Length: 598
Image (cartoon, rainbow, N blue to C red):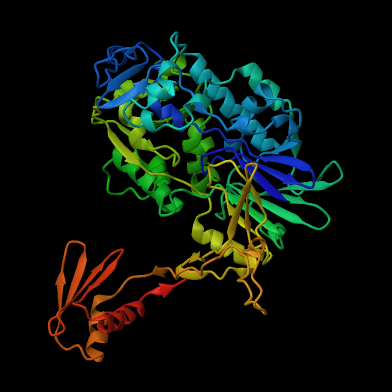
């Protein structure tokens, strides 16, 4: 088994290539849309504010980029149709890829670029809900961009010599030459026609050598983890999974047991934001904005008991916001809320802001719309229309986009902004518990696919020698001593050479017999030094004149009689004494008693 390439630099939108039993398998094909944050919004109607933005003037006074780059509130944006960061498809010949396994609808958005722009001729496997929702997302993406055509295109700024002259973040943007405009609907339909629908626990034979099986991941409707196995080996691919009990089928953990290798990706990037807490905060903010009544308890209570009319407008497919909100607010979705609101005409769907919406629009109202980048879609119109009033509020629930960067081209902004990122994917503590429950084989290699460099990584044979040490609840570290062998873009960690045996005779050793020396690693230290306990320890060892002073970075422990100073800071400790090595070593040993070694 070889995990040959990681083609995506986004931690939650993977695109990996696995070589297993002469079968080349692509695991997901996520599309990184955060690149759109570098572009100006696409307004549905002419925006005088955006059209009057000044062009960029470089430090040397050059103005040759003033048609492509515009300045707004201290930021520089590309004045062109938004472009997306594709997986690095040029790293390999995609005609050699046999199959593509899709985990969820978020991880299939780059599929048309792969099936229609490369030599890929294989088969794509995904569940039916994943394909249907993925189709809606792609259609919405294409329609949002195509209905606001832009005549000019910007490419001069992508020249490396020009890019280094630009201000951040454009200066630091990676692989801008790989950015591409959105695909078309014919390309979407052609890509989706190559998908073969599968069901949970269905076994699919690949060329008689490999068997793949989708399992419920518990993250979204139709989301899957995959088992890839032969007669003697079992590889589990876990991507975008959740242990929460929501409307999707629960995560199938039992089938992951006794895997030889576990490939893990798509973990939450906001582990400190509890999803249930974020949903509660969202509902609390929404209720507080719509009414100041002290009798409010929950979002559901407000909708049923409030005497004020409240209207909901939904544009196109309820995308990022509703997907997470409904999946967590089971009392809203699983009960009769949607049907009750539809029957009372309080929840309505509109294909766009034109037509019936203009006639039906009433206030107060809650509008679910996209795109979360605020660069295209109906949300651009509402931001331009309502951004100047402090009575209005925009609530962000999408965790993969920086809301501050999303708001940058709309500054100065008077409307309130609330950030309630809702992410139900696994966090590191849940992963630690999951590994214990699924009983992964001891000799396996756990690959957290966050690396961005293309490489070929063989199964590590070092796992048996690793001794993890838990430094915090759910976090364990282990030092690795190995040799890195690099050849033909293949990077293999090998066991370190054994130390040479002492010569049994006085014969001179040949040069070819020399073995590269592998020096033992110095132990790494972790932890913090509790000052009060440290002072008590010093007193027990005969230091009676100890004084402690607080500083901006930590503490200073002064031993007056010994004329010695100990500086204790967050990430370092310094012992300053006057040419008294025995005293320094003694104090060092006392400090080390409070730290962990690994």
